[in-house]
Length: 295
Image (cartoon, rainbow, N blue to C red; front, side):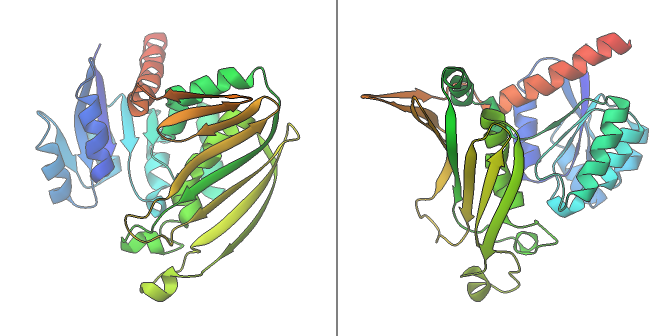
């Protein structure tokens, strides 16, 4: 059985995902939707038999797609997901999934009502190191976590606007929020502080905070903070990851490895598998299984 896949969005991440899907058996990229027909057709031209569309609804009505990947900026979500839900088409949506709570919560209720298969592109949870951390945490009690996303500001116009990206915490740091929830459990209370310190003076039209810290109280009783900044100059050494402090030592999770700082020893577990490939496999396997049940 071959899964027919479509994409909404034709940027760099769409190309990244398409190149991975091309190496997978039983998957065929069939359609692209963009803000213009020209952009969509140029993307489709790279894939044999694919077609381009300038409307998600038109693409979905014209193509018998088994799954769709949504790779658009934060402010572009809503109508695309509604169209897929209405047609019962499973989808993987790249984060962020929206600019506020209202729209994602509404979509979630509709997805749950139809028991539709969906996924969000939080690839940190698919890392080898994250799975190893989960195994180690079964034998330890978590006290607290410290998360980080320290770097520079992407210089695209929509990213610097609150109604475009939603700010750094939503556009980037939500990866660390997902990692925290996946390894440490659900959150019950949240407190935040943020400020505009540098970027609004260095670049025109910056309306998002460039530094911030969020404090979490977890259902387990543990506490955590996640801090972020986008003020670092190009080529600076930033910091992205989550440190988990336990009664058995510290676990340091980054996008490259896990370091287990236990008493008197330091163990390092490097990622070997591509977490994006595992993300695709998990989503498409669920889509395939549901197709068998439905058919």
